[in-house]
Length: 158
Image (cartoon, rainbow, N blue to C red; front, top):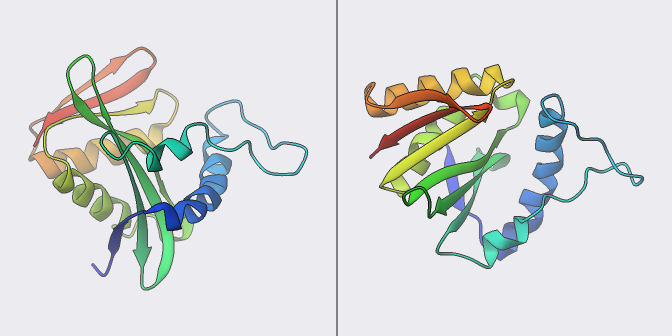
């Protein structure tokens, strides 16, 4: 698939911030979130940290045929044991169901070797189905899938 996963330097921060508005629009179905007086969603808390902490935070943009189609925010978290986590994952609706998300997720997994915990809100059934399928393919079925604290969690080591 002709897809680029680009490590988003500071120069791309605004692109992610802009795409984040569309992500929050999609996600507002699952959590209580409304636009502010200016018609925009409140800025994503902690987004700036992705350019301040390059040891624990990794921002990526997804591009297909010279068009921005999404982003991925990855974190390296210390507990319960050090593990990677998908903080946020977004593909524009127009580009969903064509393998872009699956390809981008697998590339991110390949870039960050170690223990992974990927979680989704209990009510976000489309995300749960997506991640179970992608992780099953990526690990050849060697992962754990469970409910914990109101969310579905998949864990694996690569």
